[in-house]
Length: 256
Image 1 (cartoon, helix red, strand yellow):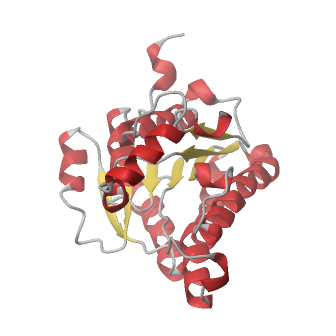
Image 2 (cartoon, rainbow, N blue to C red):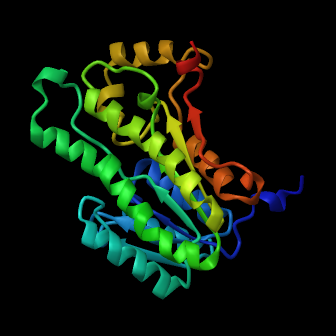
């Protein structure tokens, strides 16, 4: 298989939650593979230098105001991407988060709504907004960020777990509905990855040791590039017959 099978030259990507962590790594990996990149940001003026890094790779870049909990911003971001970059070929729904370490019986309605909104509702309606331009071109690649939490029960994370499980099943549903239009929909499900978001929890030596033990095969914390590489693969011609799948990137945690 030639290296061109992983080439994204001529494609336009949109990554949500792009400012830091996994989103940042994914945006840079897509640019390195040849794609122009629209950056979905909660504050378009605070990209932590990411736009300059993408430009340095010789790619076009478009910072966008895009809080996925605000559906008006989602719709505007999709339209602006197509208008200014000419198309939308690749969508990575990375934005997520939630309120964790709360027993199920103590979860408030506000905590529930926030976690479901940013992980599931935002993903659903971003996919929905991207459908029209992808259908018009007869081509699309969507990669949703699920989590190993979709496959296991994490104490204190019931709402996050259910939201990510729903993302994985949504991925299957959209793959079946949209395959006829040339749109493939997949997901990745990472374990604990070393990012600014996980840094507070992983800085606790006892917690970190427990996580490394549960990552049963490799016994180490993941790095953002290890998720970004899988996303590039799913967006590339090499994955052209793959749809409806959730690729688990967990170092062996869930097969234990």
